[in-house]
Image (cartoon, rainbow, N blue to C red; front, side, top):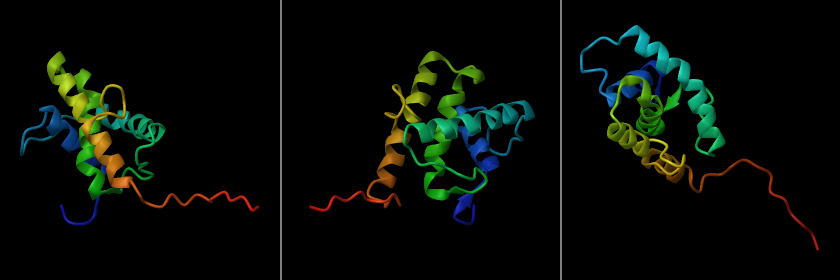
Length: 127
């Protein structure tokens, strides 16, 4: 994909591919697509609550976050797609993890954001 941003459609297709639901060159099932699309807002809000990078516009996902975000979405949607308990645990540990925020993708996103300016005002005390 050219460009530095990806769309929610790209994200959903990548998450479905991570789940093993979508094979290369196969069209996406509309029911599967709509299920994942409905969960995206809750997943993004959960990430913000865990102090992971916030994605303000799901139609403009920074390319650096894309594969980690797809792993998180796949892990959060694994129960609907008939994954075995072992497969589901693997997807969750590759995504947000259990407890949330300890998975591989969550740690990777935290590492990418480490050391970046927050834009918050610094409190000072004058003596």
